[in-house]
Image 1 (cartoon, rainbow, N blue to C red):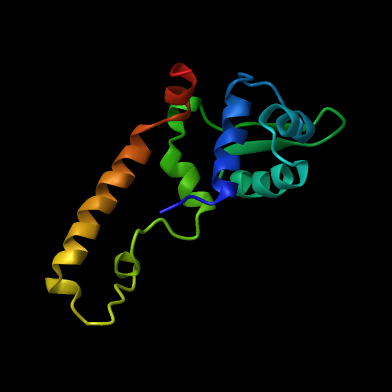
Image 2: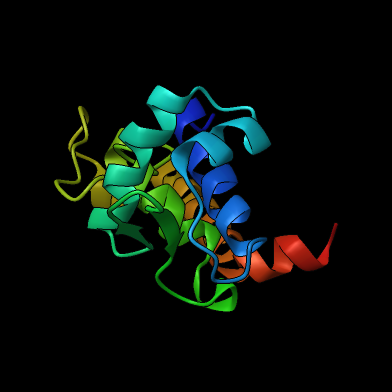
Length: 135
């Protein structure tokens, strides 16, 4: 399993905003600080605004700021916005697809389910504040 680069960028964008403590930060500033191409900052911030993780401020001194406190934003919140799926195997998707029709009695699926739960638990435990505090 590998997260998309846009997910890494989204985490960095939110970290950049959290480090500025309520200050409105321009996309150019985020781009330079976090070494993310500005076109990606603009693209990713649209998704983060739609998910209500960040806010956009318009105008000459516009930019972005967090919509919630850093301790209220988990890595899982960000990953769920940015990744098309977070499941480690197709059989865990909502439709429970299984080419063997063995969803109910598959030992591999049970392992995947347990592992998936561990991953999601860990991602939900780590907040933006946790990352800031562990510099």
